[in-house]
Image (cartoon, rainbow, N blue to C red; front, top):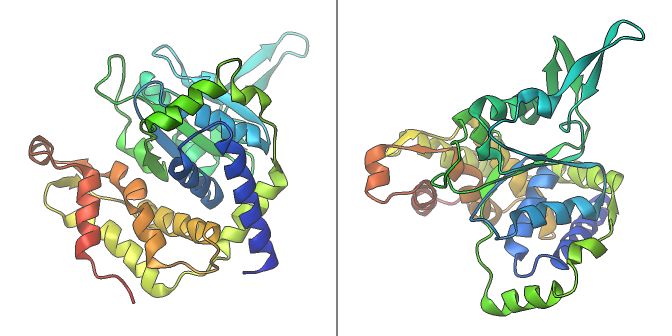
Length: 315
């Protein structure tokens, strides 16, 4: 590994260690979250209430010396509440734009599926192109723009399903799940008097995270492994029971996230294991299953798992 890559790996270790002070028993989730951050993607956390989704996002935000904003999605939230609005100033008789919370480095979109699809779509351009268009003018977002969205399962009351285009802009979707009883006891002990988040301080700077992202881009990935990533995504488009398969954006996200994971593992090249570890988190949420397949118990995650078993692994 180069000196820059070694330094970037230390940045990952510092952030992961800082988050572990708050999030007990969630090293796998932290690993995926930081992989998305380093690869330039966005994350969707879907799980039951009280599993620590918001706490994980806030722990990351407090570990990086960068701007952080939170949007609590509600049914009456409007796109202008996210992007910003132009307000007429009586003093100079002109409209002045007041940027919304999307103009930040790390954005927590809390319970994103409680807002209407119209409001959810306000993030499409921001997540896909790192820019927003308001009043006919394009405004670029920060060089580091990372969205962590949380949602409750769609069966819960007062939720709207996210549009397919919105789902496709999340590099990963994963859940935290319930921790073992021993870990849960340690959580209770840690929060007996105050929340550990209150004592969490930044351990890396914004420039450290930007250097981490640049180092990930230099991790080598062979043409054979690029084709392997494309074949995994492509297989979902012809699989029985899948109405909408993974897009080319999924292949790109799988390649970039595998590069980040390889760096975290101490390699300057991607191995098939990194692609296999991330395939379900990167691809499954993008698939739309046929009703018959859903009724028979087939899930998109299981479908990606079957594809991984069948496809030959590059030597």
